Length: 429
Image (cartoon, rainbow, N blue to C red; front, side, top):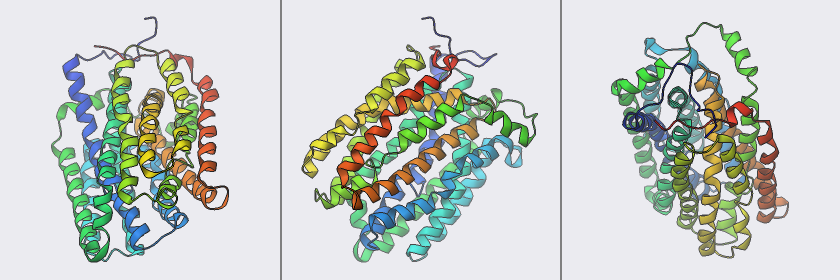
């Protein structure tokens, strides 16, 4: 193998046992966030069902609600930048997890005892989403810093993506149950239980920040860049890093799927007469298809250059949605979900790996939160355009072909990724 090993100057690969421990530790706060976030599966999905079934919002109205609550997510890179430059009580990432874990838990507790009207949901979800960006900045910056410091960004990409997607699969599988709980006389009680669950999860985040493994937090600090630059100098350092720009364009294209989210949900419900449970099962199968491929990626990242993995992932991703052209019922849609997930897994893992390897040292929180911000910006505006195409410009098939064309546009952007990054592989310690 002639590729340069992706390793930070002065650091060495870890023995397998210690590497695995650090990877698993780093996944814990990411896992908690993705269970607890009000804009994601376990809590976010029931809110979507509540808006659709209880408050009778249209596809466009639901997309607009999602757009408003996503404003903190759109500027998530600001929270990441704060993480990189500010240490609450001098405790670094521990301080961010403790302070903002507690604050998020408090807002959830208040929401649990207020009537869940449209306004309450909008304001409450907006506030919790804002506070949770601080914890997300700490979790993502921590994982990227450790991944780079020990030349294991490909493996860290796998952990990060599994911890992100696993809760969504579980929530989608429980979609029918969650939908049923939020209808009828018990809807308010069910919403209260969900918000209390969110509070409990964020208290768990607080406990992890306060008492989590010393090895994890100390290791991240060991690979951190000493803070010597002014705020303006750090901003300019980020902007002058050419490697981040292909990542930005790729992420915007990859997550802009007019036919992949909201329009598909309404198409299944309206044209295919799928129940909420079947819609949830479809997305669960789709997302579950990514998981074994992520495991494969962790193995491949230690043996193939990143550039090779980027091309494999992007080429496989282009036809990801095509199987939906052949569905005629909710049952056939479930079958179509299988190849969709399998085709997208390498691309998602490789693009995340690329983002980690492209971070300017010491600005890992900024870069990874920018990566996440681009996900929300692109997906939310993709939903808006997808809803418009679906309702006014040719129906669901139009959104599907547009999505395929957007994915194909990723291929030429790969040529812009710096060669020094494409030539790297994970260390195999």
